[in-house]
Amino acid sequence: MKRRSFVPLSSLSRPAVHYFSPVRETKEAKVERTKKIVLGLRKAYPDAHCELDHSNPLELLIATILSAQCTDKRVNMVTPDLFKKYRSAADYAKAPAADLENAIKTTGFFRNKTKSIQTCCRTLVENTAARFRGRWMN
Image (cartoon, rainbow, N blue to C red; front, side, top):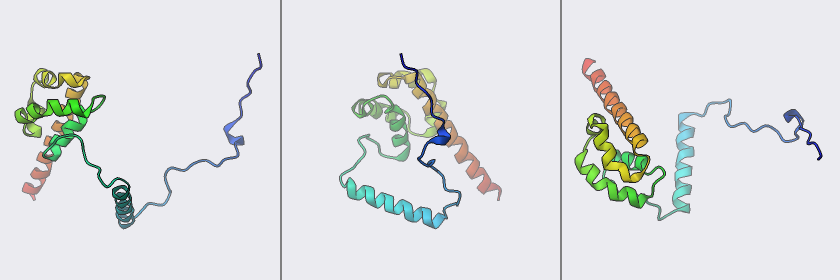
């Protein structure tokens, strides 16, 4: 059996790929670049839309967490009852984990998804409260 020899990385002829430029992009340049990307995506996918049923950003966030390793169809079957029961980030944050797990069990990985939803919603509640506290103190 022939033994393979290893080539040191330094001897490769192709240059190293730099993912980050050492020069910082200005905010204006970033906004312009983002606009071009969005325009290009809209041109390439004119009929694109979200398959997850939602009526506000919190519902979209929860549905997105539930969609991991699950079909959008299954998520859309689970979310109507879930969205009626839990209306705010605070509702998800203070919900007993067992209740939330039972509500989302059919989406799979329900324990991890429960932890993700509750951690995310606790963070939203805490950050929102901190933001308002800052305004009231000034």
